Length: 140
Ligand SMILES: [Cu+2]
Image 1 (cartoon, rainbow, N blue to C red):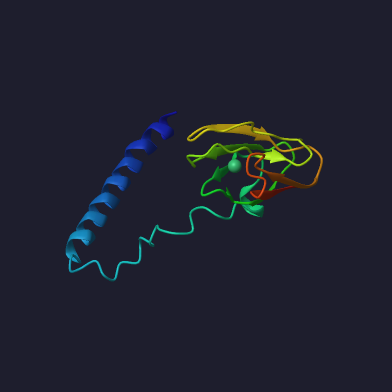
Image 2 (image 1 turned 90 degrees about the vertical axis):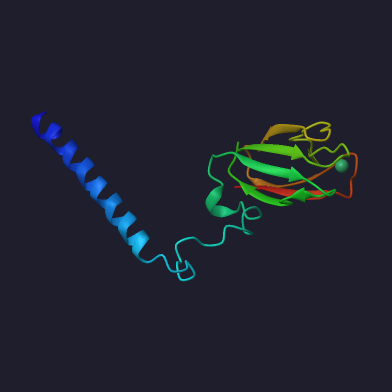
């Protein structure tokens, strides 16, 4: 207990010292932050790939926009929850060809959660209102 109590002030001091140092160095090289490579441009590359690494059992999202599913191809683990959101003004659905999952009608701004089938395989789906809208859910 004593040793633990002794550590805390030290850690705080070190943290404070580090703060001070970073503040000082931050002040000293205040030329123009042109050479600082610390902040990569946080644009692009945010959406699209929900592939292999990011699937797991976590929540997966599909957005319907511009009469298309985004992403149209998705690979998930069995039983993954998939939240489908319609951002179009038109009503859409996300319905498996074999009806193993179906959001039902989604009006603008609405979302529904479907559960990926437990059986591995490739499940194609459409919007029942606009059957030319197609996507594929792969379970494995
Ligand atoms: Cu539709």
